Length: 432
Image 1: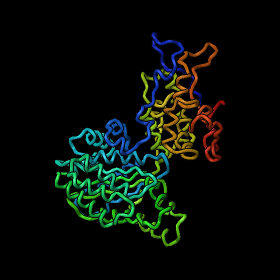
Image 2 (image 1 turned 90 degrees about the horizontal axis):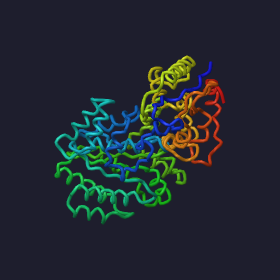
Image 3 (image 1 turned 120 degrees about the vertical axis):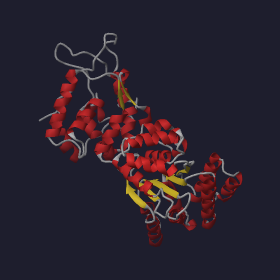
């Protein structure tokens, strides 16, 4: 059994030009196509409103919420997942949830979370109620000293929060490689106390792209700065009026960055990771498809003929067991409608293909928002709205063939499906 092609155009009103391109009616939300930089984007409510909490994200947020009390608790979490899997976006959303309750950022985040888990949202509201929220300290990893990057980030956060300038000067004075670890931890504690005195709820340290710092550390093992991560994780367990939360994001487990070190040092690195609760951060295909569906924007409804074809395609894919695990038939049908003009099989295969040959959601949304050759934006601009021809033809549709050229920039033109994917999907595709 094969999936029928989608040959009908969308409805055209009388004032639309016959050759009007698809991009006049179909768009990809811009917030989904940009990469996240925590330091740059931390105060952008539009990105928070567009966030769609997935199952992995909710699991991580619950772990963070467990540590929002002032009692002793493990508050060090490591998100470990491949490039482009959404770790930074979760970090941005978590920071917004812990912002001051009167801010637009916090209100946008809790409103989004209400739709996914109201009880969890209330836990974050309660944690910052009547206070200034968490002091957010963001480190975007670069090949540099961990001590220097952390102290610089703390100094920036102290300045932005209006805490005493003398504290900022002390932080800057220690922002150098080789600074004593005990001095660094004492300054972290002083920041916590100063923030408590200012009416704050806690301190959140987010280290994105930690792998870059770990790679730098592996070339300078004599400094032993990785032990600062262990000390921070242990410090975060302590009871405090302004508890410390530590969230790190990296692509691989710690030991993968220590391959050039001796066995003793590799064992020490593994011990440091043991101080963190580790979450494998890679969404199943069903969750990624939900995010894809949220990214599509369209003016007007589909015509009855296209809806009927989508009904048949959905029924065929369901009967053949071709839907991803966890995606119910009704939800799949809604996704096919929302993501038109992507062919249903193209839509279903996108997340898996991007995991196999590229950088997960980053590649997926680069394709969807790209106007480069073979990007979806370029295709939408070149495909016209046109009524069915008398001979029975129809409007162009975006099926598998155009997509093979798409995931990476223009020169990468010859992708093919891995054998397992080819065996699973191609029997359900009709036509070239």
